[in-house]
Image 1 (cartoon, rainbow, N blue to C red):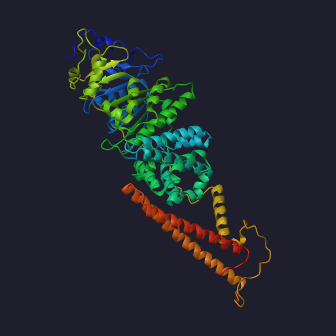
Image 2 (image 1 turned 90 degrees about the horizontal axis):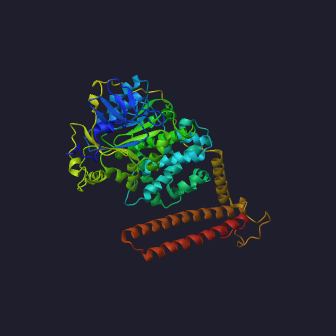
Image 3 (image 1 turned 135 degrees about the horizontal axis):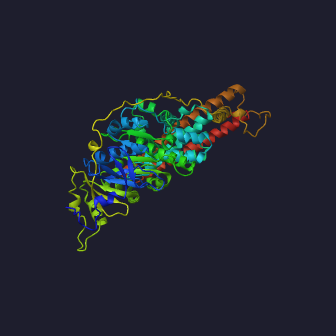
Length: 603
């Protein structure tokens, strides 16, 4: 048992006075405000006698740890939404089951909130959100740095949220490819003057198929030759385009697997095709955004993580444009945080910088091990940036030891709160251990949502604003500069098929030399030219067959090397001989081209 008489621990009634208070009957606030006069916050303990919740009105982040079924949602998340609603602060809420929306959206709407739903359980209802819209708006405005920054966050969240530990090469290569495709889509749509809703996930997938439709020959396509003139696009796509066939297949397979969640439902592609709300308004007027996902699978977790990252980055940018702080405080309420992929390219930096921009986080996890698995050594940075810790029932021994050690020891060197004590926090009494700022540890009671006002609540239907129809691009039309590349290729091909018209020929239109044909051959000039052309055509066919055979032998050699770990000398020799034969025949063909250009025939 945790003794309330231990002088090394805070008494709940004493700690209660250090925070702002919310009367659960009148919904009025009192007590300490934040330095800038704000009064809302996350609930930390409940005073049953006064019928008041103690809430932290400062800019502190809060971490909640508790096993599944420990009442994280009922005793902390749902009360937090209600408290922030009475304070008029904006919220972005991860809602894995949809129950947070059902329980609170109706009351928030009655309080004058703008309700936005990103509904991944049923994408056909709710609001639409295009993750490519904001970065493309920067691209069109000429802010390439900001566009690339947002595009990088999208690629990072989609591809690197979960990296294969055995061979990360494929994930990082797929990430580069994804970033390059996003920037190429921006470039194409701007050059072709397509409408803004042409920049969508569906067309990103189409562009991936178009660029790599010919496999390793993608490097010879006019689209690539045009796109590669852009430094960022070239740097991002080079590793996928200019590589061996097997490597390309591996990269594209990884990319397709990561992007499959975005293309799994037609209704989802429609929802991601355009945006019908403005993220910037979240920091300007009281708004509640519900990110509703199926709790039985994690297929769409990357989309939730992508929204959290992009909304944060855009709100930070908005804050810098308006004096450094948002006009309305924004609270990220992230239930089941550790089930989401790693958010953004550097979430620890995000949580560190958020406080000064009027942004707070409530992070709920089932175990510390989950957080470490997702963020590795950076998990310690995330935890240390949370000023308030609320520990509920858990059996995670390592975490319990860490918490017990943080709580210190008595004079007899026994722990103030033992691991055994922490394992026996009462769920029925809504008990929790609170570590708040510089205050001493305290055993507190929380408030279950059913005791927070009326048990009944109003469930409202999803509001679905008008959506623009998805704009699909077939990529058959290319920019003028890419068309010029096609014409150059056609001219070069025409010159190779008509050597007599080859502008590279150094011989002028002088009279042909005397024929070396035997007397009486009777071969006309036209017939001679026809014979040469036929001979060249046959040589080209033979060259193609030999090159195909050379490629087959090389691939067979590579396959056997991978299986046996050794290189077979005989096959190397065969491939080398074929290479010499091909080179010799090509030299002979070039001689025939030269002879044909001067009008001379040779049997």
